[in-house]
Length: 310
Picture (cartoon, one colour):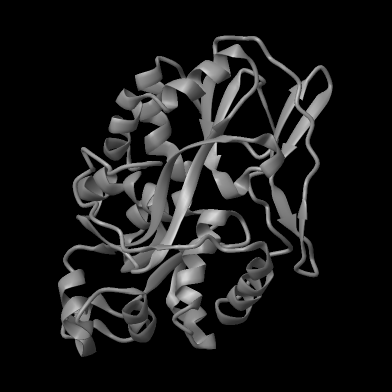
């Protein structure tokens, strides 16, 4: 990949375009985009979210009594409240954080006991050490073939960079890419593809929010996904921003107790306090790692290109 696409969003208001996010240039150095914001006073505001937050966006739109749209890479209407991973939003926009999502492992339920028996626990190290092993050698049926994993491109957004960060910390060999048969430009698409093509990966590493978005679809189509958590592991902050009275009102509602208590059922966790009403198959995350720093990002992207291939 030539660089970081980090949720570029544009709002055209009277010819003025608002660009959001930051990129990593070809030499690997991060650079922040410039932004300008003008007011919008339309109270009829829709929610816009990336695919990884689809489930949360649908549920929040229903709870807030508004509509939703997919977060596009270009211009979006001004009457929009954007909900995204905070690391994909330029800091000068002063978005309001309201939820969080840990990085997690999702694995097909019938295969997880076999891997757990082989490793003692299903964790990142176990995935890396056994990728490319036959299931027959691991103690499973021979017709399962080879142990394969799925990852999303970490050059495209902060959630998938944090997911790669925990994989890279396990010191994978350069040949790992041969066994990463399922790849996608971002975590939401990764999980959707896993459900559509279950034979292409036995386990994936992504944000819990992206995993949650496909738990029900997986049960309906290919089987149960079991979720495991790195310990310690990264937590992603979820934030909202928008212009005008309507958007500001929606941001205030996101922080209200009734909405915060709803987040667990939508695959998110409240920014403070314990999650309630968690979706089935979600569990207890490990200890929280500090967020990846700007200085660490270029090296992580370089490691992805060296180990998995750009």
